[in-house]
Length: 129
Image 1 (cartoon, helix red, strand yellow):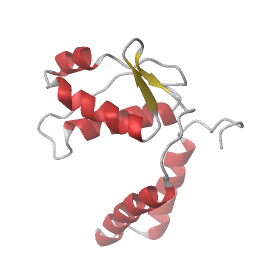
Image 2: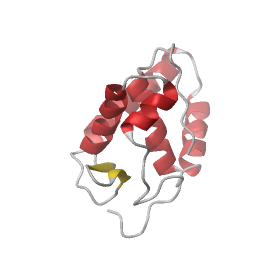
Image 3: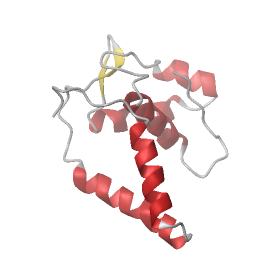
Image 4: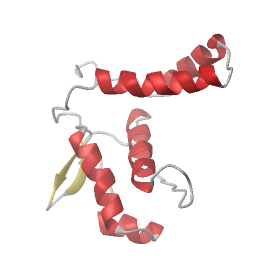
């Protein structure tokens, strides 16, 4: 998995890291049991503070996408119970769709883009709720 961060971008670095890891999980690049780089290693690679990486990893942990362990480090998991997700997701999706409408994008183009993006992700496992 290759991560890229825009150090001068508007999106906070921890959010960029979190988002790219979530996308890698959805695309099947990272699977159950995949190890993520150590926080200090990843921080050194990007020349950022390791607390920034810690913040991204902690957010992923709280969202139930990874587990953190002193011995094994950060590991992708699908077995950790996550907090309620639909209301959070709906609010974020609503904002993105509102931006599309505000910029004048046609509804059919938005829907086509959404379908294309969904189709680009790995189909969830049968035993996943």
